[in-house]
Length: 386
Image 1 (cartoon, rainbow, N blue to C red):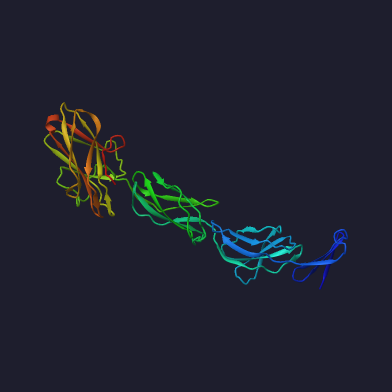
Image 2: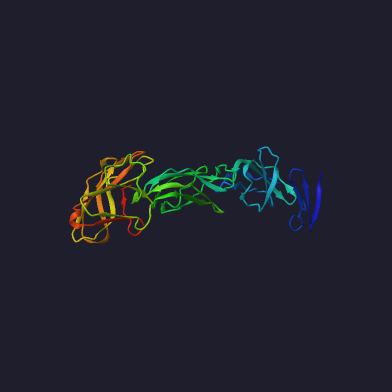
């Protein structure tokens, strides 16, 4: 059946299959001949998922026929049925981006001119799309300030499915201290494992947050412990002395991240020799502290008229870790005395404990010495090489 439409001084005809005909004016076509042209679909249709995981880019070779543009069809099956989802104007247009619902899709195009369409093009697909909703960070075990560790991050949908097409980077922040790097490398198949380093003070509630995408989405890890290997002296006596040095006159705890009162306890030595031990909690996972300088920072005063001496040493269990060091405490107000102890590499396994031992000698000569701890301004502590 032949349809005819009068347009200006010309006539347009169409037939089935996308053929259209034109009867042009005499000044254009002197012979006033009817000319026909078969609309051809675009060739070389191809599709790819972009790095956001939810956008599909279609490309093709434009048709050479007299087309107005292209109609974009989508289906969940390569064989249809097909749904018209977009109209792209311009015969020379050769690309378009689509943002379909989450799923797996196939695409096809038809060339159009007015009410006429070409046959269907070849198809592109399957193309999987998923919308980023959040990032999931795999559980992180105990970590140590200044030491690198691996973090695995996954891009997830609202239903917690993996966004396999997500291939961008995220920024990283942490709840305490500084973190490097602050930007990850590019995700692959929606997953990225990044080696990071956090430098900060002790925290039992450390977290890492990943943020990325447009609009921005984020995710925060579960809390984990960050060790800084700075142990403050405490007033309390350990519930158990197992794994500590033992045999001291005053037996006390030390702990990371502890502040206490200011000052919490004052040692007073007025006669003979005296000693004290500060013992750490048991180590919960294996680590080797590198060889280096372990600094015992003790706030001491001497109210007498002559000097005394104090010797500091580091122990793992009952074994000394390096040589002891003796300092002279002259008369004077509370002052931080730093015992810079050379310690070897210290391998630790779960259950091991570290101790600081302080031994006062020549106390009678100076009559009275004090050791202050607790608080923030005069807090005696030890900084291991962790």
